[in-house]
Amino acid sequence: MPGVGENLAFYNLKESVLNGNVEKNEKFAPHITLMHPRNSICSDMEFAQIQKFVLRNAIQFRKVSLMVREAIGKWQVIREFEIVHERG
Image 1 (cartoon, rainbow, N blue to C red):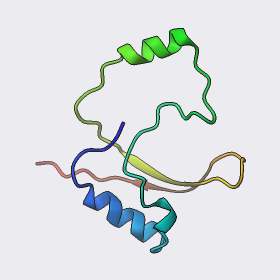
Image 2: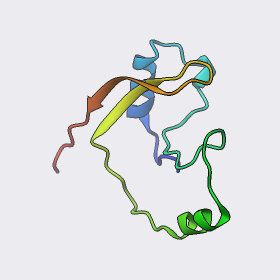
Image 3: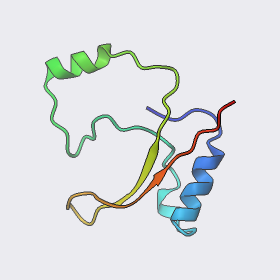
Image 4: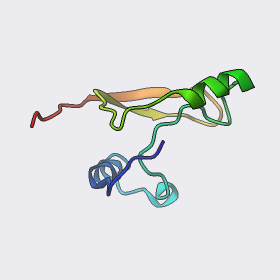
């Protein structure tokens, strides 16, 4: 599920976290991956259930995790950032 809008804050954060090394990752936009093709298992019945699920127009996150994975190993959380939402 892709993010919507210009996503300027996302790209600024990404550039800051990657220390300007974004050339190989420049095509990635903010998104949520429900099932990754390389490491998910899903039957046709499970996929049909997922397709019926109705998502809200907006999802608010409380935390962002910086993760790394070397070769085909497990993802490791390097650091987590709490998100403070402004009330308006």
